Image (tube, rainbow, N blue to C red; front, side, top):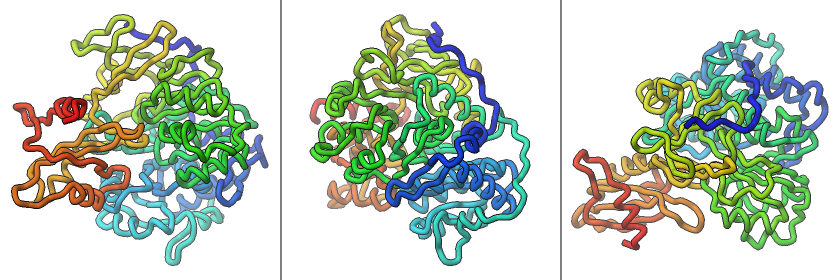
Length: 521
């Protein structure tokens, strides 16, 4: 049975993302669009519009043409949106890069995306310069200042003409984030201008964001959740986005207080801190009206504890994935008694099926794999047609790999995952990637990785078969991996075993490892 949204359909936005977001920027004029939560520096809507147009001209002078790829490797700053919308105005595709990436990880994305420019910050230059070797990158630019490198502000000062680009919003790729999908290594997710512009309009059916609102941008813009929900959505609505470069609890709380933040989009670890950390006591959070959690599962009891402490009617949840631009569900902000643990109701202009292992739709109240069809479904994986075809079937249904059920009120609950990805603080950690790293250690005979629960988070745990006589310790294993991957991918727990359980095909039987973990070994 195809499940339809209870919300009226929205118009498909066949416009470039910069027009969808900044189309009313001149009307908003001097209203603050972006505020640096650390320094207090502001960029108004009129300035953001003008700066992005000048950056587009600057990119054009550097030879950027329609279809070129610009890599944006930066933490959250108030310049990030300037670069992003400047790049799209120039006709480029922006591949957003995880700010925590090592040079090797960045190199892989630069090669795969065929990026020709890399925009970063001075602090990241050691990683960036090492990463561009052997890539198509012609130049590295910085968002701040660094001797010997062109700055974004030099592009803002460009006197060249703004490029005139003809867009096909349904086909032209606006942003190329990298996702591991349901399994395996990271892949470029081709999201068109139509995909992400329309998804903003779909989200607005559940988030009625006022022009007087102040949003805290603590989740990274390089993640599709941050890019769409903390940058595109509030800027389209005329709200003010207060930007923080990273999560520090004290700074986060101070900013909520001093900047009179009205709405916070967060991930479960932040909900945990808001619910339990003593630092929350004594901070004036009276302006905060809405908290929405997404990017990873949030326990219903934890959500209720957080809401009670903050005096909110509920901590709302939302659901999606990079391949869906990213949203498909959200708990409406005006919902009456939303059920704890539910991730929301289906977005407008979106269809869903819950499909059993036999390929048939499940009955009411039963669990099945979540399939989605709608204008937010990605164009596909860059250069990976077979993997695209394995994810999106001929009828246009995207198979999410998540298992869910729907209650009688139309709320979706995500109860399990078919896919094997570990969600650490909202970041995707592919077990296969960590296993590949482990197996490069001569002291490791075999290894498997699963996600396990630890203090409210899912963390990577390695089951390792050590080489005889190697003297390998648990700390050795963690240190070896930590030196070779981004911090969020680190192995957090290690257990030595005699053999990794595998099927006849050689596939690791992770369910047996999960059962072992559940039984305490």
